[in-house]
Image 1 (tube, rainbow, N blue to C red):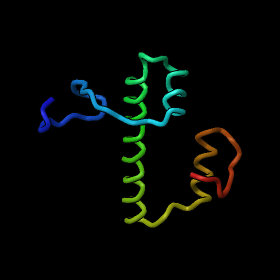
Image 2: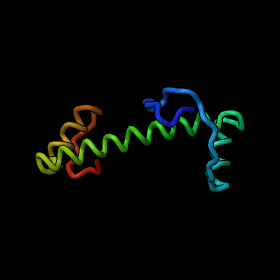
Image 3: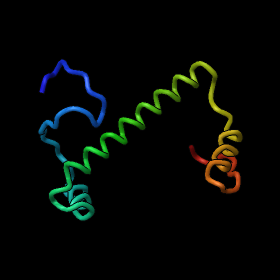
Image 4: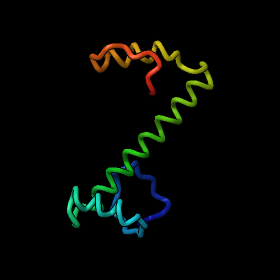
Length: 92
C-alpha cells in the first residue's frame, strides 16, 4: 500500500497489521462474530472511533468559538430526538 495515498476511513485496499488485545476482549469479539469475522469487526469499530474522535473535535471547536452548550437546551433537543421526556442535566 502506498503510504503517500490519501484514503478516507473505510476506503482503499486492505493492509495487514498486528494488534494486541486482551484475552477477554478477543474472546468477546469471537463470540459475537466468529474467528473469521474479527478483522471486519475491528475495522468497523475503528471507523466508529474515528467518527467519534472527529465529532469530539467539532464539538471542541464549537465550544471554543461559542462557549459550552446549555445543558437544558441539550436535554430538550435530546428529548425531542428520542421522543422521551426531557432529562435536564443528563450526560451527553
